[in-house]
Image (cartoon, rainbow, N blue to C red; front, side, top):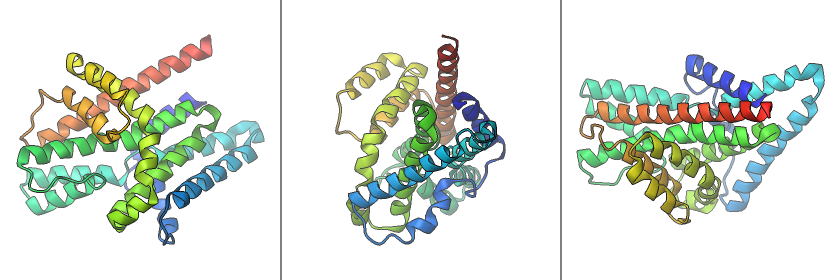
Length: 284
């Protein structure tokens, strides 16, 4: 059921999912507004509570009406947790602004896309566009590849794990947008996601290494296996940048498009591999 649900969710998301209404991040805002104290304990408690609710729901639906309600819930959870939603609209708005040389609108959309890690101050145009590329690569990972990983490896508990990851992602985004860096630090969210993202980042990194210049990317990937301190953002984007070395880095439209194109290739490769492994496991 995992493979069928995943493929169906990706098709629906690609064809119909626009805006934020079908995104868990948006639905959780009513909860986040009530949080006034920030700590690692609170972050973990909220995440476990969300996962417990989802697990209880799945248990309650198990075996009912030939598991049709359970399948519907799997699909709904997939749609809520997988897909960039409103972020995709920001990306298209950036392209429109850049193509008509509207610097104000372009910078506004770029700041939305680089919300989590930001852009270094006083950087030149080349560095600015590189950071935008990195942000787009990370967005693709956070909203597609990481949820896909937890959905698949979780098996029957896939919806529980993917909801837990989506909650952490949404909480980090909320803190970055509405709270101070000190409050974000107190929440411990960056440290939690550093641990949670360790394995999927390196698996995704293999795809980027093989798609691009493997002679440079593979040594960097092997080095990352023993690296416990570098942020997962920098590990992933460094590997992806090897694949983007031959792409334009000074064109404000072509540069971000190159990153998105590369991210789509990596996503397609990973989905195909997951499908083949699932089919093989079923036959064996």
